[in-house]
View 1 (cartoon, rainbow, N blue to C red):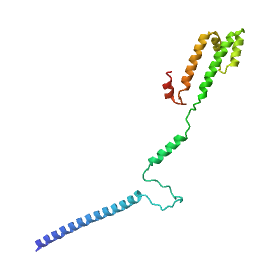
View 2: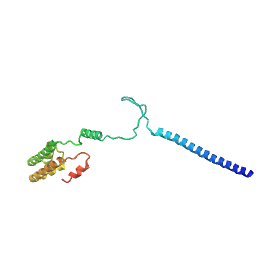
View 3: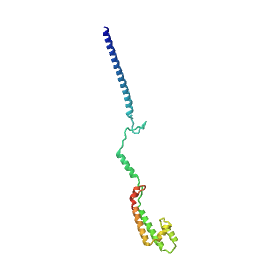
View 4: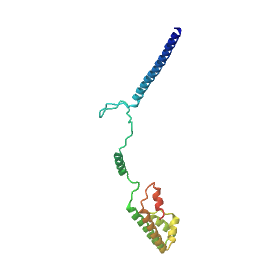
Length: 186
């Protein structure tokens, strides 16, 4: 009978160990589940954006940040077009400048021809040409003009007029290096 009891004690001991293991597993599962639920709700609360009940014209109590960026392409393009239409070009094309410049050159050449025919000293001719012309020239430049014959003066006049017409007909804008490079081959 003692042997049977010992076997019965062994069975009870085995049962107690199994019950303890099962209760230990249950405790671990319970702790894991409770921890998971707590962490889930904490992260759920921080991830979901707060909702505010605001009406049109209300002042928001806090800064509200959008969860995503939205861009209205049509409205953006309309604003870009409106801004571009309101900006003035960086150049003003005045067609009278070419005419005035050509008139100034023609006037200078005619005055040089006239002064060359006068019987006065060179210094007086230079002073007269400086007074008569609207073009700012040095004394050396005027002396050089006075030494040219009529054919050379006519060629110079034609060359300067042609260059002025070409240069002033270009659309060279301020701070646009590409325009200058493109048209510099004149």
